[in-house]
Image (cartoon, rainbow, N blue to C red; front, top):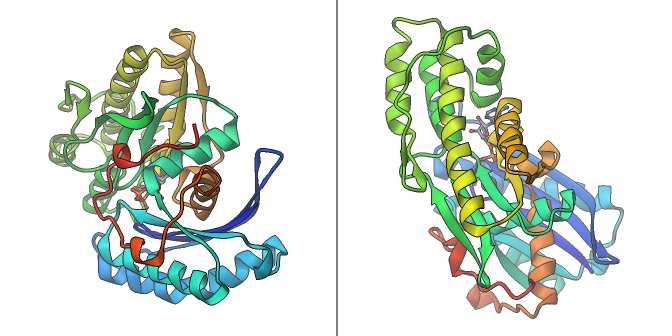
Length: 328
Ligand code: ATP
Ligand code: FE2
């Protein structure tokens, strides 16, 4: 079965063509374009305009690179939520247009679950606890009693958002995460920041304020280092607790922030100390991508999911545990 997937919940417009062959995920093409705000944070309407501009070209490129004819594509998958309203609506419109024009079934996919499913498919892990750390999202997700459930999450902003906002104030260009990682390597001194774990949840806005404040007295290297150490230790703590609670022995990373080597090291060490296995897919499957949508659409379709066009209304606040999991 061949699927075309459209991702467009936030910054990234992604298109991918994926084939399921002998039960395996074969990515035939995976292309994307990222909206970068000229100044300040993401403006949903502008990001949506960006997606509308680039989708036609991306779709053409994905088909060309995959070397398939549209008639060979069996289904159209798209990110139905959660995400920014205008971005979701633009992506859904593109998906509906393709489905109607070419008379193909359409499947709306939960973005967070898609991060987990592409990770399983690409790394070969079976039943992991996912640490999903991206710009807008920070969640610990695992499969329990027939559903993907959230075991911990941010109470305010996403970890990537925290890094990007810090970067903006500190004069680091967007996205700031990769640059902060580089600068942090030259940090020498740990500056105390408010470590904020509340039960199974985390919060980043207090740390952001404290880190910006501390910039007045300490070097940017020391602050970047301390910011990473504090935030990543918090993530390790709640991820470990979710692993203990669910008795799972695999941990999987997802989301753009998971490409950070220091975060990978911390989670890997935690896993090894518990006798658990650590998995991280290549960067193109960590960040928002069309392949995760195309692949999850196949899993859903093959397990019996069907959607009429009238059921493809976007779900801005789509919860991970709302989805009925029929493919596991
Ligand atoms: P969503 O939250 O919907 O997944 P997004 O567009 O914010 O959407 P991603 O594409 O997964 O998320 O990731 C982008 C984020 O990852 C940005 O906040 C960026 O700063 C961060 N990031 C990317 N590389 C690194 C890195 N090496 N270290 C830390 N953060 C990083
Ligand atoms: Fe994402």
